[in-house]
Length: 109
Image (tube, rainbow, N blue to C red; front, side):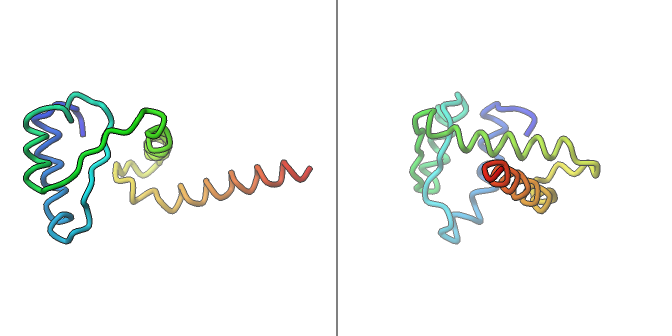
């Protein structure tokens, strides 16, 4: 998404949620404290799908933001130019496992 403007975020979120909510896969949205999640337009969307909307304390969002940042970093580093995170998932898992193994090996030294 190129913008965090409500008029762009909410319609895209609506298109994403429609199939997920109809299959009962989503019941709660966890968001940050961005202004796009405080608008009437967003509140109507939440009401439309009868969802709960949670804005946890920032310390609880840190792991999510860290994962998002890592995914974005891997996408930016990719040579194939695909903006889809799913196209990079295999490489991210391998890199993560290598990093974990290196940490364990360092502890054993």
